[in-house]
Image (cartoon, rainbow, N blue to C red; front, side):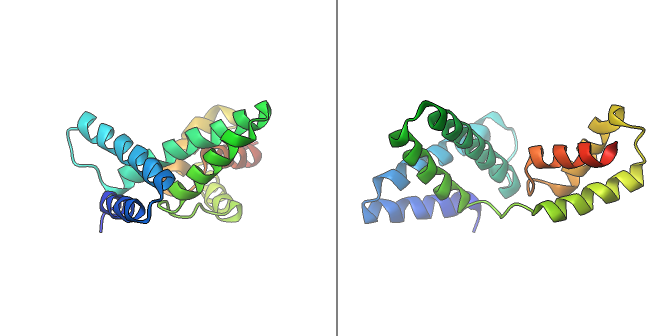
Length: 147
């Protein structure tokens, strides 16, 4: 079953259960996927849909930071719930140890000449890791080991 089919099925289940908040979150996710589908000439793969959901997760995480700084606990709780729901549909992120192994092996393979080659290393590492690692964590690891 594709990711969009799973989202649709779960949205209908949440509707039957009367869980309006979950329905709204899933509608938002499906709308983002649909908009990307319309913009794209090709059919979206599950990996493409995961990237879209990760973008939505990133937006929510940014909102959580903002609401925390503003002291808006009411909005903070809503955003945290949205984050939990969306993360159910994404594969688990790699651990820092796993990321570090990949970063070290690529640095050994590429032999970068300092920070000027960071972009090249980042591109290759991110391509290998796919969407299974946080870009900020990867950047920190590359910076740590490239010096």
